[in-house]
Image 1: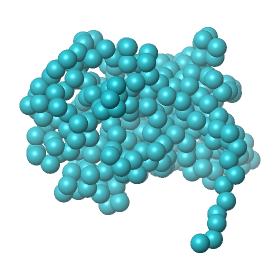
Image 2: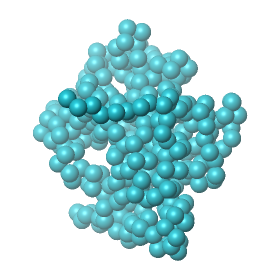
Image 3: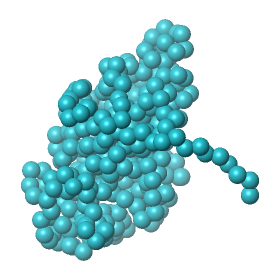
Image 4: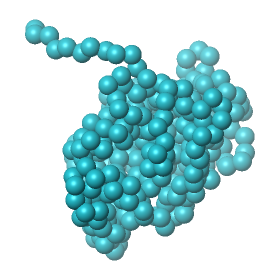
Amino acid sequence: MLISQVKAEDGSIIVAVREEGGEARAVKGAESLYALAMEAANSGRGLKEVIEAYGLGETVDLKAAAAAKSFLPPITHPDPAHLHLTGTGLTHLGSAATRDAMHAAVSKVEEGTTDTMRIFRMGLEGGKPAAGTIGVQPEWFYKGNGYASVAPGADLISPAFADDGGEEPEMAGIYVISDKGQPFRIGFAVANEFSDHVMERVNYLYLAHSKLRPASFGPEIRLGLPPEDIRGTSRILRDGQVIWEKPFLSGETNMSHSFANLEHHHFKYGLFRAPGDVHVHMFGTATLSFGDGIRTQAGDVFEIEADGFGLPLSNRLTVATVEDVTVEQL
């Protein structure tokens, strides 16, 4: 089942569900996906069971919603500060090559000896532990909260001080935390983990800065566990023409870590088990246009799609005007 959120003319949220290839229908009386998910998490019922209890109503034209740019992020929180955007890197087979070469050049060390390659090899050796055991922890980063969550079809705004704004086609896990502090997985969605790769190249310790950018995911969430072998396409359009396109792989067949291991090392922190919170956790990629020498520019459109995950995710790149931020004394 695929689930999405569309903004109605009166400003309310329409929660739409469909099977892959089928037409979408509104969930009757649903306030939001967040409300449905929290009801399921706190009642001990599955999300599909909760949706069936509400029932389905009118059809929803998702292609028209995309054209009208009326998609909302597929999950939102009533208080955006309680939605967390986070991620893990160096989790996919082949994902270390570009970053290793970049960091080796900056650090003037031999390729293969960087911290990038060391942590990648740790994942290869211990990222898929046997059942009941804990594997090695991955690289982890913070991107922001719900204020940095960008709706499908909306602009990804690169700050004026940024050195670059590049796409990262990924799978994102979508989670809510029950009133008892238990994480529950809703499902997975296509995501654009938008980053500043030029800033990261200056110094590896700038990685944290480079990740503090908006991100988009959706427009649909695939409920439940994902396929083991996920195949998608990432492309960039400039003035309506494709200037770069490449397939990307995800799913555990193509990863050095299991999803369960990555989830464990995120939610092991009590900070991330606060009741009522939403988590959108991005699981990494091995495919970047930046690695092929592409420099994006304002007006470029990123498109990311994957088989079995619904409609493509599309966002235009824009650049913010210069903003002078000062701190004043109270």
